[in-house]
Image (tube, rainbow, N blue to C red):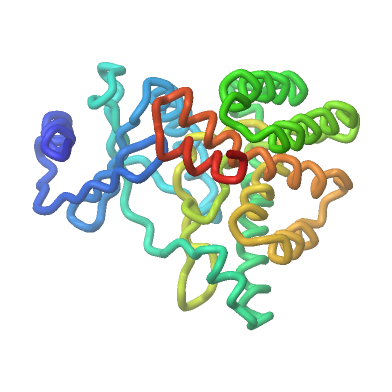
Length: 288
C-alpha cells in the first residue's frame, strides 16, 4: 500500500523529495501518509470519499481567507483520474495533539477548561458565520435525512440487535419525528465530524491549534458540531461550550443530544455498507 501511494505522489509531484513516509490507515474514510514528518497526504478508502474530498478541498480553499480558523490548506492535490489510489490531497502538518475525553475529564483546573472552551467556541462561531452561499450544496431536509437514516438502521442493523435495543432506537427516532417542529435552525457551514480525533490542541497555551478532516463539512445544523463535543469530551464541557456560544437558538442543546445518540449507529451502518467490520463492531458494541 505504501509504495503505491508514494509512487502516485512522485508521479504527480516529481520534484517533491520523499525521504521518509509512514502510513496511518486507522482512519475510517481515508488512508493517511505522513511524509518527511511534515506533510500529510490523504487517500480516500471508498468511492464516496472521492466526492467528499473534492467538496472538502473546495471548502478549505475558501476557508483559508479566515486566518482565525486553523484548518489545513491543501497545497498538493490529484483529482485526475477520479479513481481510488490516484486521488489525494496534501497539506503541511499542523502542530498540536488530540486530547481524549478521559484527559478532559481528569482536568480539574477550571482556568484550563475555560481557555479550551473559549478557544473552541470562538473557532466554531467563525466557522458557523462563514457565508453559506459560498457553497452550491444546500443542507438536506432534516426530517428526510433522518427518516432515511432510520430506515437504513432498521434494515441493516436491527437483525443484529437485541430486542430491547431495537425498542430504544425506535423510541429515539420516533420521539424525534414527533417533535420535528423543535428542530428548526438557521443553516450554517459546519465541520460535520467535530470530534476529539479531529481537534488538535496546543499543550502550552491550552488553545485549539488545528481542525482536520473536513470531509463531512458543508451547510447544516450548527448543533451537529456541538454533538461531536458532547460525544468526545462529556456533558460538562459540552454544556460549558454551549453556554459560551451565546446564540438565540433554544433548541440547540436538545438537537445536539439527539445527534450524539445516533453516532454509534452511524458508525455501525458505515461498517455494514462499506464492509468495515471494525466500524461495525465498534458501533454495535452497546446494541448486541
